[in-house]
Image (cartoon, rainbow, N blue to C red):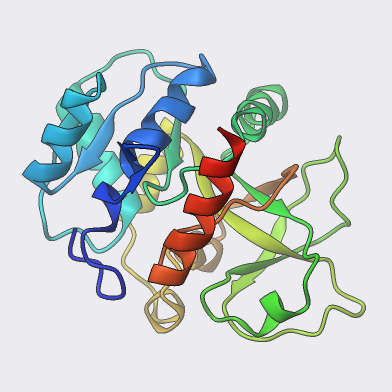
Amino acid sequence: MAATRLPGKPLLKINNLSIVSHVFKRAEETNIGEVVVATEDQEILTDVLKNGGRAILTRSDHKTGTDRIFEAYKKLDIKNIDYILNLQGDEPDINKDDIINLNNFMIDRDAELGTLAAKIKDDKMLNNKNVVKVIVENKLVENNFPKALNFTRENLSISNQNIYHHIGIYSYKTSVLEKFVSLEQTNNEKKNKLEQLRALDNNLKINVALAKSSSIGVDTEEDYMDIKKIMEYKI
């Protein structure tokens, strides 16, 4: 709720449903497993419950979303879980098939940590520091799951690099999630405000699957108006 650029954004409405509840329902549509919203805000918990979802309150002092996810996992005390998927609460139009595809890759490849990326179709995205880019070791195609080499917000030339738009979803082996949160934040992570750099800095491998489309993260009023138009037009 305290997002500096767009305060209260999780509860902004699209088609009379809050952004965070759209994400919850998209996650449920995948039929992968139990879906829980982890939040520090009572208003978000109340909204999710009102819209038929499940939510859990977490501490307000977490440095990253991954740390919050781990607290929720421990509080829920769910046994026999191999993988945990972490969706961002501000990406209401994420493609459910992309979520399913990532989950399948993680299981099939016995991967430790995975995420999604989409092709960059507009060069302006390269100059936008709100757009996180990922560089992968090989060109992304539908049936491969290469390693991530780096993540950045900076402008990078698209020439001679396998650079893609990073989509903020993570899948962790539960053991890797526990290891990740035990690690100190690295200078690289803090400087770039990208928690995934903590994993790379500590030699944790992140694999990347190709997403069918770039989901829009709602960080600004402009983002909100853009995604609102897209999703309300679809209806």
